[in-house]
Image 1: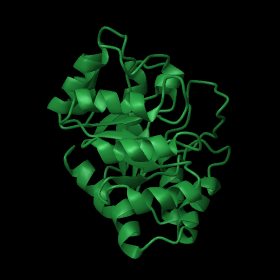
Image 2: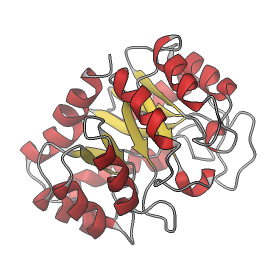
Image 3: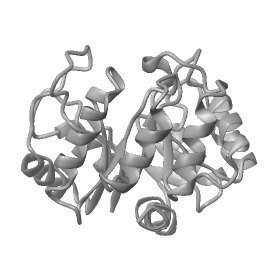
Length: 253
């Protein structure tokens, strides 16, 4: 099983998201408890202060368990060295992709500054995962527009539209060849509909682990257990948890 949406602790940033300090050992203990074999880990601090140091710290965290953890770094698109930092992330640091959070980071997905960043990511066969589901800056349609500007770059909707935009996320995943949808915080009734109607090879799953106020990440374990009540087929489950994420990550090695 591959969890496509988790986070490091917030080591340097105080946020309303909370989160308890935890080690890579603690995190792998959570993964074992939830039956997760591999997790995509996203920077927490970098979403609030996108400095190279945040990517260094993420790389050090996932580097302790390279067979279990895959890191996606972050940049701020308006920083003049953002594309160069993507190059460094993917080569020197060995990260596998890029996480953007337009709502928290305060930029529009339509900005031209994103193009050289996406080109650098494409050149290294990386993956772009973006927060979605919270207007005004993080709607699925805005992210899909960026995906269409860069048709060979895999772009992942990190939350499947959440509660308010999941129908939009589903429609755009069906229409946009290189757009993928991660069910993460998406309500169960929406998850069932997405799995019934989205292209079978384009749905992923994430827990958002790392934002808990306890090392145990109990809420993330519960999100994995929740899948059993969705009423989906074994083929749908295996595609979402194994085949689809494995295929995407294979391109970024």
